[in-house]
Structures are given as structure tokens and as C-alpha cells.
Length: 64
Image 1 (cartoon, helix red, strand yellow):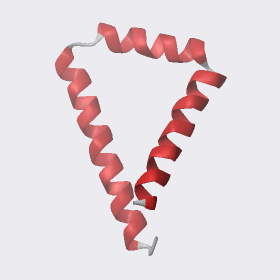
Image 2 (cartoon, rainbow, N blue to C red):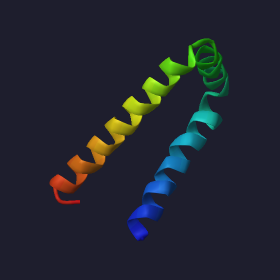
Image 3 (cartoon, rainbow, N blue to C red):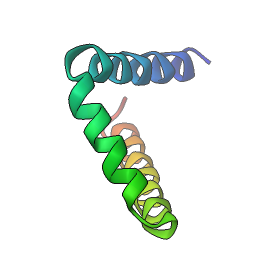
Image 4 (cartoon, rainbow, N blue to C red):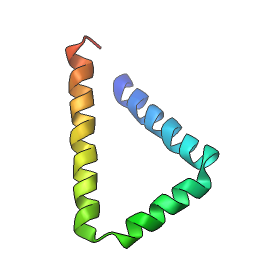
């Protein structure tokens, strides 16, 4: 359970940093996402999920 809380905390820190340090860049990225077709956004989301799963797997393999 503590590992899950750690993961959520790290995600919140990274998301918060994006809003705090580069809000205009974040707005431009959202505009680009709005202009993409829904299927492309879904593919990007799926790739991010797969990359996240891979990173979690690597972390456990090296003995987290």
C-alpha cells in the first residue's frame, strides 16, 4: 500500500511541476492534443501506459 501511495505522490509532484513551471507550454500541448484525432490521442495514451508498465517492471527487476 505504501508503494502505491508513493507512486501517486510522485505523479502528483510531476503534474504539479508542469503546471507550476510551464503553464503556457502545458496550454499549447493541450491545444495540440485537441487538434489531433481521438484515435491518435488514444494511441498516445496506450503507449504511455505501456511505457509506464515497462518502467515499473524494470524497477522491480533491479530490486526495488
